Image (cartoon, rainbow, N blue to C red; front, side):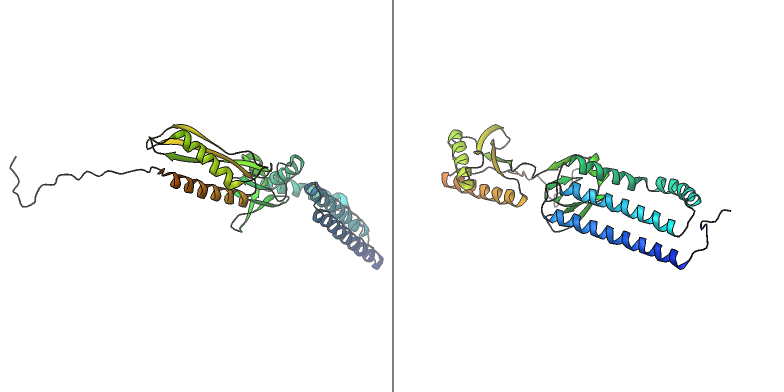
Length: 275
């Protein structure tokens, strides 16, 4: 069997190998720090910078390992042969992991979202913290850290709530039959516009959409800023304003009514008639 070490090692060989390994580690640390510094500056290509930095670190570590082994006079032929056979079995076992790594590359290239975006993916919703080599990390609105495999992020529909600065919400409202519908529509739309009171947003509109089981159905459409908190605050303001306007006009929102008819129950004291 051919030995991995081709010659007797000397102190100089060990010193050279150690120095090579140390320089490699220091260079990798320096690259990582430079990458983080660029990301902190809010570079618009932060995701690609991070991915490129990690790829460069991997190449540096691989080159450092090669030259370290060469300094130790390791026969790389037998070592690479054994490594190749082992890598084949490892690749089969780590196929899901490799798929996620490829998914990370695709996400970095396509960039359907960035750090800080608020997204909905695989029924999970939150703010994007990071895109690692294997998963996309979200911070939920309840403060929970969520890790979604990159392969699942790519294979399932994705909603980016903050891709555009504003988005629209539709609030369904039901008003009773017999009300002055034109007046109610104008009043609801006016109350919504006054509640939001922002010239940068498209105007709100109220449209009658159909006849429901308990009243006329209205679709109140209003725009707000895309941030989750902004959307919730806007919805609350609109609900309060519309409720106050309807109460002031004497319009009562109909609700489901359950009518119970008591069944006739025979008196147990009365004898049963024979068949």
